[in-house]
Image (cartoon, rainbow, N blue to C red):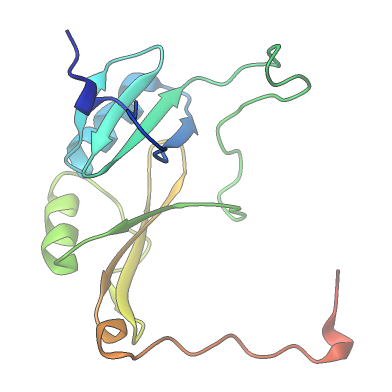
Length: 157
């Protein structure tokens, strides 16, 4: 029997989980369990991996259902455009980076110092982007530079 504390099933209020539409449930489930040190709570239908204080829920894509009419779920198709990503915060990014690489994770770059934090990115087997960051400067009130201001003539909406 599954322990209620291992499931994303609050007794009061709410919790937030992250749902991923994946091509191969077993491959994705194993990635999140291995690379992020998650606990597999449910192997499939849907797969649920408890990672630290959150859960990642994974299922294959599919067409519309009565509760989401007109909506089709599918894994990412292109790697150059991202509308959301998983944000993982760690206490020691150098240790996480080394351990994840040893387990086969491929990062876009090594961890880079961004003033407020040190961060790097990797992709999961379906191409979902994952940011891994460690708070550094922000703990002393040092934050990243703001993006350059657009002039009124740069509005391309």
